[in-house]
Structure formats: C-alpha cells, structure tokens
Image (tube, rainbow, N blue to C red; front, side, top):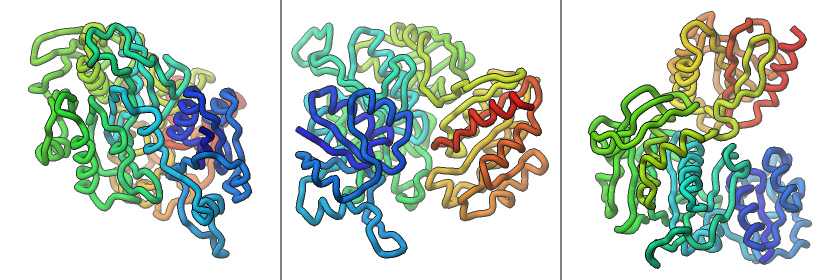
Length: 469
C-alpha cells in the first residue's frame, strides 16, 4: 500500500516509515521543520519528505494516512487550523489510523513482541535487549526511539522466521519495541503500548511524567496495568523490584510469569560496581559483565534486558557477553568532542530523576577531581509546565556548576534554582548560555548537555567557542 505519514520526523514515526519501506510499501511523509537525524535517515531510504501540513497533500492519494501524535485539532490565533491536511482528510472521509495501530496490524502481527516500558531508560534497554538477541543469532526486528550504535539505524524488520527454532511454537520471529506510555493520537488517548500485545513485557520503572496528559501517578499506573493485561499466560512480565509504583501495578492483577530485577531479593540482581559486576539469579552468580557504561541506572537496565532475553532462550551468560560489546545509543552520554582538555557530552536526560542518574554516572566515571558542568533545558511538556521545577536543585547535586536555558518557560528558573546559589547561571538564549559556559570552563572539565530536543545545536557551538577561547 501507499501510506502518507503526518509527523514523520519523530523517532517513532520515522522508524515506522523505515519498517514500512523495508516491507515493500510506498512511503511518503510530512512534518514541520523537517530535521535530522531522522530526515537524513529517511531520505537515504528514498522516502519523499514534504515540509508542512498543507491540504494540497491530498493529491498524493495514499491508501492510508498514518497520523503522528504531534497532529491535533488546534487552531491558530486567526482561527485557521494548525494542521489543515488533517482537517481535509476528515472532511473528505479518507482512511486514517495512528502509528501504533498501523504497526500492530501490519508489522507486529504473528511476531513474539518484546516491549520495553518505563519512565526512564526505555531506549537504552530496548537497544541492549535487541543487541543481546542479535549477538545470540536470533536476528530480531526492532523499533527504537533513537539510533543504537551497534546497528546504525533505529528500526528494521528482522528475520521472517526465528533462527534455531526447536518447535513450531518457537518459530515466531522476534520484534523488540520501545513501549511508550504517551498517548497514541489526538483521536486515541490510550498509551501507545497497549497496541503492541507483547509476550515479553519489561516494566523498567515508573514515576510521574507527562503532566500535559496525565493528572497524577495513579493515572499512569492504570495505563501500565492495561499493558500487563495484554500479556498472555505463557508470557513474562519483567519488573523492577525497587519500585513501589510497579508493585501496585502488579497487585491490580497479573496473569503471566513474573521475573523481578534490581532488589537484593529479586530474581535478577547485581553484585559490584555498575561498570563491572556479577549477575545473580536468585542469589547465585550466573554471569559477569564488564563494559563501558556507567551508572546504577544502566546496571538496572542490563538486568532487565538479561531477564527479558532469558524468556526467549538466551542464557544470562550469553547475554552478559553480548552487553560487553554494547555501544549504547546516540545521545546517551555521547562524546561530541574535546577541546583544550575540555570534553563535551550530549545526553537525552530531561526528567529530574534522569538528570540526577546521568550526572551520577558521569561522576563515577570521571571521579571527584574533575569538574562537571551541567548544561540543560527544561524542554519536555512536563518541565515546561513547571510541574517538577522544585526537584531541579536535587537533580543537579552532582554538578559543580549548572547552566539553565530558560527561554520559553512559563515559570521563573532563577527562583527555582536559587537553592544552588552561585553554582547556577540562567540564560534566555542559547548564545548567552554558550558565553556563560565558555567563560566558566577550564581544562579538565566535563560539559554535559542535557535535553530531549536539538538544544539549538549547542554542542557544536560550545566546541567552536572553546576552540576560539
């Protein structure tokens, strides 16, 4: 079929486009401000990209319009629709569906789906699990909300039949998917992940987030329980044993095998530092893992991936050996360059807990004698609303200095960060922020830039300005 994707440059929709193209469909798409890296990846696949959401795109006459959740019924100040193409599709009575639903019906059907859900670490854990299965020779398909460096692409279909299958029941090809709790589309307010029907479900952690669509933590727990309800009796739910919120989710009902990780009494636990540790299953050592990643959060991500891979026949020892060669994901503590002994990193962290765990990981890596300069922007909808502004000083405790981009916020960043005293500076523009950071930076410093967006290309601007210093 010919599908036309509205909002094609998001990581999820771009990955869906790549899968549809690989499956032999004709794919076109549109977005506002068509931007890399997804635009580069899509053009390399021969997918035509159109700028904007103009109604003239009806002339493409696709068999199906696939609607990203960036699209809404919003109106501009003059009363005209923000997404005229969507209005035209509805007026003409043309067929449209959401990305998750199209994926469920055309890609995931008949596959053993391994879904990774959680407030933090979804992309990294999905990438870890995919790499474990690949290293074990199982040729999984995958869709990740980022680009795993071991693969270089964010999505692929994988083998049509599972290699090394011993029985017909084992022949279902494997597909690993990052399972997002954000809503599906403007016409389907369920979480994306309820469409995926996993046989292996990872519940990595669960905190309050997405204040723009969820009223409270209980509302998100309800969606996670909807996911648990879709796992068959022969399936496995892999759950973080440290999280009370997930205990409540399972207490509401679970009809599948449960394997816990993280706590000392969990099925899977770790003994040792995050970069070098023993993997224990029910208290007994079953594998050793030594790798380049840092931080307790990545140790927990590894345990989750190992427990999920075991469900499809991969021994923990094999899984740990694969993770020893895991290269992480772009924009996860990614070194963007080094100038005059100053290293600049890019990281996706934006929720206060993610900021804190990312800084903890870097602190463990560089030690107490090197300064960390945390450069961040509260860019997610939750952060823009100011829902978690009071947690920011706590999240930045491991940073020697902090620099906040406050442009476009509806709350006073200086007031919220005041408990940090002279350790923090606030700027309303990227250029002003760059000047502040460069003026403070010294040889041996580590500059960690954190945002869930492009951050105005601040990484290259910092490297260039440091070069000229």
